[in-house]
Image (cartoon, rainbow, N blue to C red; front, side, top):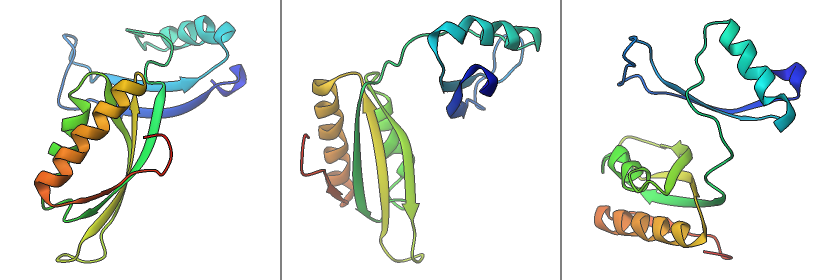
Length: 144
């Protein structure tokens, strides 16, 4: 991929799902000059890799938020799922700092959404989750 000018942005394995052939679906996000996309897909096909879908970036808006509190003890997965289940926004990155078992944690969360309105709604959803779980949410000063 590098010789075509491409970079891998992220890889997500869906280990809990299997294709009809028994393989594990993998979502790969890449940056690549458009003119080289067909060549890359052909190379992957030669190696037995099936590309199921290709397209432009769907999630265009991005925001970084901070959560503080007992993040893990209040079910981090359900907090992420509240955003991911919308269909218009996803938690694309999360960094968690846990100073001690009984101490509050902090998490930096990057959310991407399909548009500005959708991002505003995703932030509202995360705010509701944070309030319900007794977490402090810090938003950026500008934009959202």
